[in-house]
Length: 537
Image (cartoon, rainbow, N blue to C red; front, top):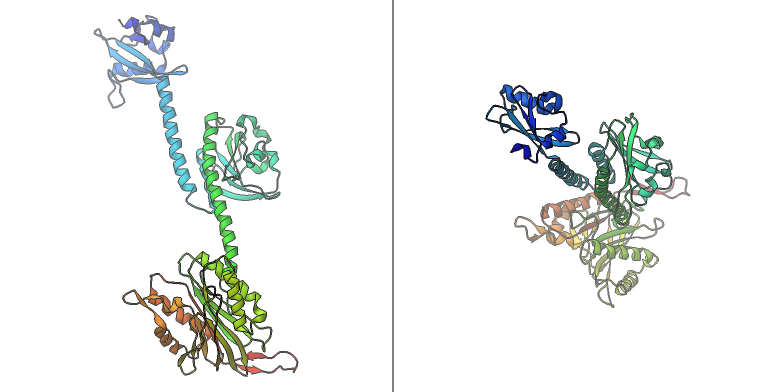
């Protein structure tokens, strides 16, 4: 009955001689006729399997009855299953498994590609640094898709930023000034157009700047594909294979585009983050509290600690606007906007800019506060703010202050003997009522004495042994008794350090402090009688 089987069947005796074949086997092996030898008429893998079966070579690789052999016949693959007959011959049943093996190979390839894309996505999204993302993209592409890879960033004018990865895995960056039109399909890829097939790119025409260092073999095949971004192309990917390897297949080009889409999304996200970070840094630079220093013989020092650990600005602020000369008053302003975070910081910036615009009116605190209050009432903001300001000037070694509070805690004065007193000023907060009022206190500071301005983030900081007790004004006054004769910078550092220790790791509001100190300096006249004098130790 085996003669009518739909599968090719070859029967051989134990010595390897062909005993018979069915029509399917005769069509597959025309020379396999009775009396011929297997090793002359069938592929070697069948003849060798028959020999091993005949001599029963021991070991796990030795095929016994029922153990199939595998091999190719032309462009097809077969499984040869041996079956012994009653007279000792062996019947080799050949089953064509080409389609199954192709399906298994395709499934294995797809699984490997899916796993690679998943790993690549994780690696690409692990960093929002543009340069690092380009390096990872080039390294992954060179390792898994080609012999070398080049990432082309969107050009800026005539400058093109390139990231290379060669066969050795080393990544390098380079900026070239060449025309991208030299490489077919590159300019279109940088504009986001679909890639041209690799067969349209003549490797012999590739410009020299495309090849990474160390890639010395002739290029046999090249692929240029876009890196799609979020609305704007993120660049282009160039894949290179040496002439020793097979050219890119259509399936490989499609897979390269899948990888490029993920890399492009990661690069686009990294560039968007970098742009947003640059914008934020630029805006923050104007919102950050300034560095204070000595102005016209008066020491100024400030320190700010935002409420959030990841924030740099908030609702507390301070500024010092120096007078035009030593006889002109300098204006120090410290304020607290309702709320915290970025929204409070926006109103903070508006108040600071408004105060700076009103500097010509700084001699009249009530008028300045009234105009500032009107500006806030007419804005779309619903937040209010408290403010404390002082006009400061030094005359004959004594620092004179005109201190005005607008709903803000009055500043504390540290005398030379360690006594602490409160400036007698009160006022209405700004941005909440149309009519406001305030009182101005006159304060004099002898050498070594300090006037400390602070926000309620200091006094209302909750912490201590139980974690919920406010720092309070009394503790602040006690801390200031130890600051007699200290420089302004030391005073604010001391206060902020104690408040931070009191809070510990707990939450707190914005904290801002500004110290105005009369230094232990003597004023000297100009040496030549004409130029401005100076302060010296």
